[in-house]
Length: 217
Ligand SMILES: C[S@@+](CC[C@H](N)C(=O)[O-])C[C@H]1O[C@@H](n2cnc3c(N)ncnc32)[C@H](O)[C@@H]1O
Image 1 (cartoon, rainbow, N blue to C red):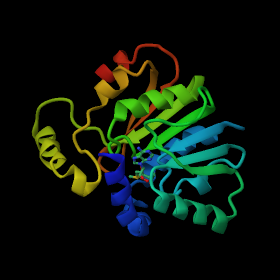
Image 2: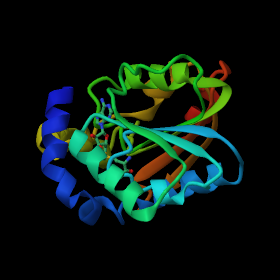
Image 3: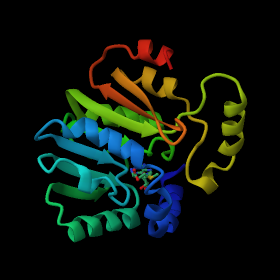
Image 4: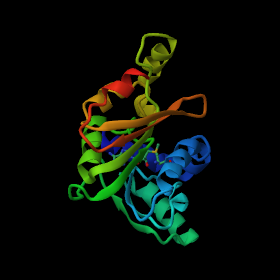
């Protein structure tokens, strides 16, 4: 979706976002943060931070920078930070994930949760995640990826893909093309509740081919 369509959609959603998506997206946020929080002193970028639902749960020892395309979503994230007295959020900035203004290799960890199916050019976002992540750093992506093989699920996903603009996300994005061209190593691919509908992919920013784990999906 074009970024103006995204902004218009999230202007409408912002007020009800936590109520509608707070619980249903919780497992992805929690499992991602569990993996990161065992470490200390990381500089983390959260791309598409939204209303900042994850912000209270980062280890206070980490420093968080959040970006989002929607000012309305960011304002709710800023309110959350102020209300909860969260002290490890360095900044929350309006920025397009497809062309970020950060220097190369700025972050130890880069996180993008439930964002890839919303953006117009997921491959551009993937390139940016890699560019701003330090070599050897970690990239976590949580998303709904469509079925890779023919079948009922793929048929259904292609059908609802026609309503992408209305829904605010694309239902028919497969994982392999996005990751196999990204020049990253895939560490883990985990299916998440509810019903394995979402997937968490942990990647390392090194140029080892992504093929082997992808073939196992
Ligand atoms: C489904 S929400 C996910 C929010 C949050 N990550 C969560 O877990 O609840 C998708 C978010 O991505 C943001 N977004 C969409 N396109 C973007 C872009 N090109 N650059 C930055 N953020 C974008 C939207 O504004 C929205 O806040």
